[in-house]
Amino acid sequence: MDANTRVPVREQDAKVRAANFEEVCLGYNEKEAQAEAARCLNCKNAQCVKGCPVAIDIPAFIAQVKEGNFEEAYQVISQSSALPAVCGRVCPQESQCEGKCIRGVKSEPVAIGKLERFAADWARENGIKPNKAQALNGHKVAVIGSGPAGLTCAGDLAKMGYDVTIFEALHEAGGVLSYGIPEFRLPKQEVVAAEVENVKSLGVKIETNVVIGKSVTIDELMEQEGFEAVFIGSGAGLPKFMGIPGEQALGVFSANEFLTRTNLMKAYLDGYDTPVRTGKKVVVVGGGNVAMDAARTAKRLGAEVHIVYRRSEAELPARVEEVHHAKEEGIIFDLLQNPVEILVDESGSVRGVRVIKMELGEPDESGRRSPVEIPGSEYEIEADTVIMSLGTSPNPLISSTTKGLDTNRRKCIVAAEETGATSKAGVYAGGDAVTGAATVILAMGAGKAAAKGIDEYLSK
Figure (tube, rainbow, N blue to C red):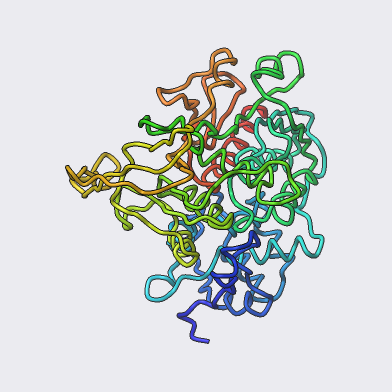
């Protein structure tokens, strides 16, 4: 095979997968992984590592894959990442490690993400676990939230010898990995549950159904339970809405609720008592990865699905791969359009959406061109269900019940980027609770930085 071209990755056929919740991407087998790994130039000054928020030694693990040393490849990755099987599936590699790959300057970059997934999946299938600490150091740390930030922070601290307990508000660990990302992108039992078990194998304890701020406060954990430091990785689970007429109608969901009911509560399975309505036609408002997840989920539940987004395709914040998969599966993109009203029938249920056409004007603060309404261009889209995917913000429960913890105007916890340190001594924070909604890998990077910060704090 030409070294300038990636080894293709097998996928389910679009027409078949649009009607099931099985994983879309089938990944590499051993022969394919070794062939793709052979494309790596093994750069001495590896730019790909600089593009990785958790600084995996990418050339080293790929070199091991190339030689067929798959266990060694996994251990190289697990030194830096607690969730390699997750990252290999959902990281935006095209803008991070692969985006900096030297091979990609004149040809296709090495498929770093698919190789990471392969190594992690091989390790799981062969019962390989990450290396754990030799002994505990006598220090006790609490981690709030079992999403990517919390699992990463807990895993890194456990490897350093800390006695770590994660407190999770829901009945199942995994955070957004369990409730937010659909099964067809990230299998829950096979991948997420296995990654959580790997973190537990390092000695981390996980207590579910504990709502920090109600069940127990951070102050009580530190003053009464003996925790010397606390990491807040509680995410951003409070959905945003547009504030337009009709948003209170029956059949209007936040993407958060819609995905939680399908992913965590298994609404798509006949044997579960948690059905979720879609009707025949669904409108998803938004253009990010979560919007793609909601749209593709609704499609699998049998609906015709429209994505309404106020900018053009070039400005879609979702990964190119996710947009491509959505189009293949028959999702309809109504771009340069914006809802102005949810239309409601006599029973109080959604019957449609009134939208207005847009055009792009001057760039806004983010550098993207601002959408401007075109007067007189309003029209109606028929819909039974509307899913709002406009981003999320942190739940203020933790910050409002913790003395001396500063937040900003967006209700996000204020924390140092390098260490995760907050205004309260011994309390650290990272991920979406600090930045607002972002990616899994950025949350992991924040958890990693906080683990280092906590270690420095408790080692003084």
